[in-house]
Length: 197
Image (cartoon, rainbow, N blue to C red; front, side, top):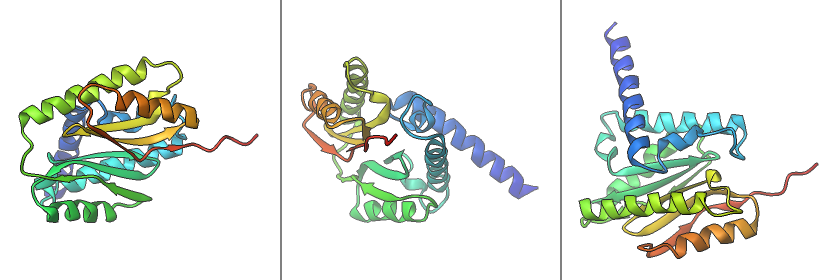
C-alpha cells in the first residue's frame, strides 16, 4: 500500500509540475501533445508525451531532483533538446546520462549552459523573448509555429522542430534573429521531406 501511495503522490506531483511549467514556459510541457493540427503523427505525439513524462518522473527522483528546476526539456519526434543553466559541467553530463536511460529517445541535443551567472533578471528576459517569439511566429503568414519549439537562455534562442519547407525555415530563423534582445540562434530544426502520394 505504501508503494502505491508513493507512486500516486509522485504522479500527482508530476501532473502539477507539468501544469505549472505549461503556465510559466510558453514553449513548455503543454506543447508535447498540443494539437492534432501539428504535422507529427498521433503515434509520435504519444511517444513524445511518454518520453517527457518519463524524463520528469526521473527528475523528481532522488538521483536527479537537483536538476529539475535547472533543466528544460523539449521533445520533438523522439529527439530531446535540453536547455537551461547548470553551475557545474558534471551536471550537464548527468543530464545527458539521465536522458540516455529513457526508452524511445532517438537523439539528445544537450544545449545546457554551464554558468554561475544566471539570476531572476536573465530569467525574466528569456521569458520575455520566448513569449515575444510565440506572438511573432504565430502572427507571421506562412509559418506553422505549432511545429516548432524554442527556448531562450541568456538571450540565446535554441530551436527544434520540423518546417514544411526551406522557405518556411528561413522565415522562422529570420523572425528569431531579428527579434529584440535575441543575441544568437542555435538551430536544431529540420525541413520535413515532402509527402509522397
